[in-house]
Length: 415
Image (tube, one colour):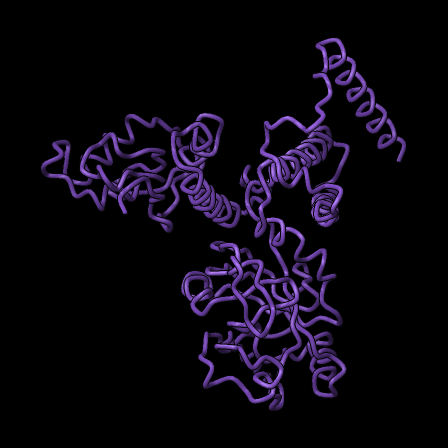
């Protein structure tokens, strides 16, 4: 069906981060590079690589392309960091007249470039504003009891099962991991307890989706409705921690694993059942980050609270509240870091603490007494709305907030 779509080549080489950005001039060079300037000679597929969105129903007109981010440099199309920053800024995707689902896809594309820039420029302060503001799904975790085959240091098991409804109410469809394995399979890591600041404990030799006919009998006994799974063969490293975990597996002291992932494409369960359990959410595409051996999985209620909220009838007020809390906390931490009150390590640790606080917030939102918050749009009035705050009242609140920040800064100075 024709309409606005997210576009833009995802793996363009990056231009120098200090290169100035002139959107109009860049568009002219891209137009010439793609065969123009006359539209009759244009290779529109080439032209599309330089824009984050286009109208599929009018794709042979220049006005059908928005959010340009690339330029032609020495005959090669390159993604320009400052062009990407412009698309992420206040006059970029958030102001663009695009359907919300297209904006969401564009945010993900922009965020992927931010992550690449942070890696290639070796600067962990480069972070997508959408991640900082909570406008992208936070990494989720999912735990399962692993059915394993152990041969020396090689362990083969299943990191995910398809077709069954797990304890969080999710049902993973076959094919959910195909794209992530193609795009970043070589960057997956096998960790202990999700400790991403420590070296991996195993190397991944093979990973891929398999059908029901390749599932072991023990797994089918536990989940007879399973239609397939994500099979992983890994070899544990000859390191103190690798040896410790391997021995725990060999002696059956460790039996659970957990994955860290983003739910890229999902839809509500809409009454779908498997094994006598109703699915709250159908996961159709997953971006996998890492897999971990764990003593116990994360608290299932906390780990899946955000997923349950996303899968239900939750309106934008609850999501807006979460994003504002995330943004407010992050701004305070970033300000203190900028003023020299926090070290880089403390800033990272506080960012992790904010994530844990949001887990608790999402869990609390599932309570019955907050059903109204889940069920209202952002600007809906409450059933018994209070009188809006007067300007004087608002000024007083802002002054109180400033005083609190001053007290916090003084306390930090005394530490």
